[in-house]
Length: 117
Length: 113
Image 1 (cartoon, rainbow over the protein chains, first blue to last red):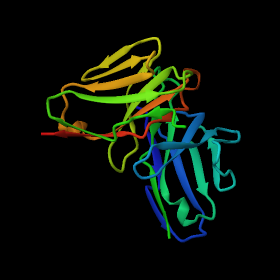
Image 2 (cartoon, chains in turn blue, yellow; image 1 turned 120 degrees about the horizontal axis):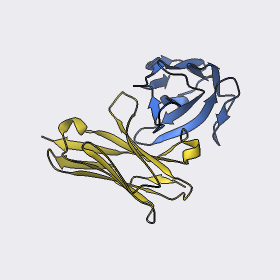
Image 3 (tube, rainbow over the protein chains, first blue to last red; image 1 turned 90 degrees about the vertical axis):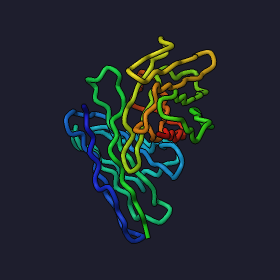
């Protein structure tokens, strides 16, 4: 089945650092990928939709300049948390949909645990 | 305003019995619904889906029921197995934009041997 790889799985860094998270579709091409954030015991909150070759679409309340998204190829999207602060600590998950699948589920990466000290 | 709600944060069931996980939604534009299963430290994995033209979809031990008038869906797992212990997320979308889904808060299912 379709596989989405997310890297790194865990990041610990100092406040003020920028952190890049990669999301790759391994065996299919994804024109669209999605970035979610999950707080403890809460649901997946959609942050933005990443579109290959064009600008990402951000959900209301998500700072575009804070969370930079680049989708330069059909298999790779990156999320950069710029000048990260402790309140940015969270679990970030990406997903992609294989357009060839009839049921069109999202395939998720295993997530990135981001801890800002 | 939470458009997809899973009112039971947790559910405990004996092995071999039926597990019923519930989900309610408020947005009448939703016409495609999915269930995902999530183990700790992993991303969610797709389980089963149903479109609004159906009221039931079955895949092995998993059955999803949709009641459009009540804006309610449920996932039945029969028989439940210890390996089914996980967090289950209900998601809803407009099929024309099926990639963009709204998720519930999840229900933690524990199946006891």
